[in-house]
Length: 338
Ligand SMILES: NC(=O)c1ccc[n+]([C@@H]2O[C@H](COP(=O)([O-])OP(=O)(O)OC[C@H]3O[C@@H](n4cnc5c(N)ncnc54)[C@H](OP(=O)(O)O)[C@@H]3O)[C@@H](O)[C@H]2O)c1
Ligand SMILES: [Zn+2]
Ligand SMILES: [Zn+2]
Image (cartoon, rainbow, N blue to C red; front, side):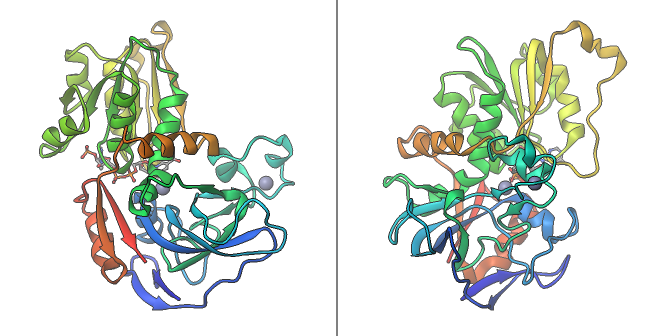
């Protein structure tokens, strides 16, 4: 099969012929049709994050496609099913974290001693074919094309989980910080739920686009958010903890800030002058919060309540797609077709 392979940390991804995987017991073989390019895929291969221990290095955790073969014992999926696969396949089952027997979520992926994760510890989805446990797939709504489903499998899953983690109430105002892959969906999710929504973006040319996504207000910093009255929920999907820290200025009394950000070098700080203890505020971490949340996000997209904005690249243009993600030029998710 053809796959997008990163030869080594910092090198350019290239399309290569590699061995087509074979599904084992409990697994399915997916013919990938569309594969979203998460910023984490780029961070894993350009040296920002630790290089993934997979050979050949095929990352990707937003693959959408069709089941073409099922392994022994698979009853819940059949050939022809339209599916999406996700980042977390499962935990090891026996480490201290797994002994808690919590539901399988992003928390499992980041806390298990030896997790199975698509495009991180197992071969990922930027390829013509992918093998994953059937249990880590979801059935895609018929109304949702593969190119639209792919961004929901991480960007949408994460941003919907983050919004839900804040438990916004009907009268509250929601701000989304960082209008990229996750953020452009978070704005739409918030509007779809009826919340007055603020987009916080450092990028001038995104102001108009953010309004088209449904933002009622667009500002360029936490200080500017404070000037328009702040927000009860601040969902941070920007890549920087410094940006999150600055946005504390716009968090209302009893507000919740949800950090979806993964920033390997920055720090989130609460300054003494903020008197955090007397504001009733909460800071929450958020990641993929279980497949029922992903199904909700897919359902909202299938009904047209949210529409991923994608730039579609054929697999032959994988290097160009990675370059545009690296440069922050994509509006708003790059999706590669295989
Ligand atoms: N928690 C999870 O499970 C999970 C899952 C996936 C991704 N993530 C994390 O979520 C974040 C967003 O991912 P993504 O795929 O949406 O990335 P993305 O498409 O690159 O969007 C990130 C946005 O962050 C803003 N940004 C970029 N550089 C910045 C800087 N130096 N300071 C402040 N803001 C900056 C930009 O928004 P503006 O131009 O609007 O300012 C950019 O569009 C990343 O940190 C990623 O690691 C977490
Ligand atoms: Zn991702
Ligand atoms: Zn474990």
